[in-house]
Image (cartoon, rainbow, N blue to C red):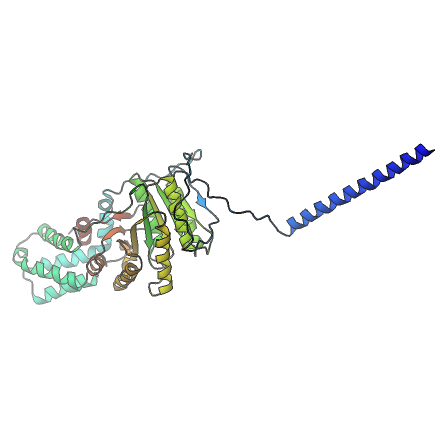
Amino acid sequence: MEFVLIAIAILVVALILGVSLLVGRGRRTTRLDDDAASGTTLTRPRPPAPPAPRPTGATASGQGLQDQPDAVVPDAPPTVELPPAEPEPGLVFDQPAPSAGRLVRLRSRLARSQSSLGRGLLTVLAREKLTEDDWEEIEETLLAADVGVSATTQIVERLRTQSMVLATASGAELRELLVDNLAAVLGPDLDRSLGTSRHEGRPGVVLVVGVNGAGKTTTVGKLARVLVGDGKSVILGAADTFRAAAADQLETWGERVGVLTVRGREGGDPAAVAFEAVRTGVEAEVDTVVVDTAGRLHTKSGLMDELGKVKRVVEKQSPVTEVLLVLDATTGQNGVVQARVFTEAVEVTGVVLTKLDGTAKGGIVVRVQQELGIPVKLIGLGEGPDDLAPFEPRVFAEGLVGEG
């Protein structure tokens, strides 16, 4: 009997313990389920950024960059061994043509949009005897094309000294003479090389700046194609964090030619994104990093100061070798004002003139160079992906004058 009572007691204790365990387990499961339902997730420190693949066939984008104050950005990136990139199966990239000769190929497009300038000048110069009214008409034609007062005076004075020759010159000779005079004021001796090559073991860093609507993001995408066409490896930095569409657009440009794009969260610190892009470029040993910045009004001193911060932060990783200011060719004198303010903030080294395909004001090239001493290095002559070309004074002058 005693054995029966002991067995019953043991059984009861076992049952009580089993029920307790089941209840505890049920409560733990319920608590985790409740946490999941409320959207709570475990927060882990952001791990170090993974090695960036060499952008010779890979496309990607960096996400989750945190704001990094100017004072706390590390001075040097960690040393990371980078594996070779493996392109996705079946992925085909565009193969842009080299930049050499690109402006020559686009000359007819330039001539179509600027031909009124050439036709007007050639018509007047072909008259048997040039009067004061004729010279005033030439001046007005040049000024209307945004050539500027100084350059216009220089051109007219040179043409006046050659007027005796013009009296008996053929149409072809007149055209050649006009091209010579225009090319002379376009700064044929200015250094228009782009600082896009590696230097002292670091990539060339190109900072692209400008006001809203000038076409910066599109220019960066087209510039990537120019560089890839010339055989360079490139990384793009989407530092326009105020417009998600800008980062998406830039990433699309990069994907078409197999170029990596580094981007951050919307509204994040532009300097942090630029820093991350250059850091990635240093680790990947690419030739060039091109950073797209947010458009900003040149009249807003706070925004211009922020642009200066972007440059300072980037230079903690690698020197900025080129600062390109994108100007809308239709803005005229306002473009010169913009260029002056941006130069004070970040020391602009070159100008990109966009939208020259829709204006007869190509003379803005002359004014920008003469008044600011900054060479025009690239021009945009259309909306096509390969309509950005290195600036060549002689070819540009021939385009302005037209075929005669």
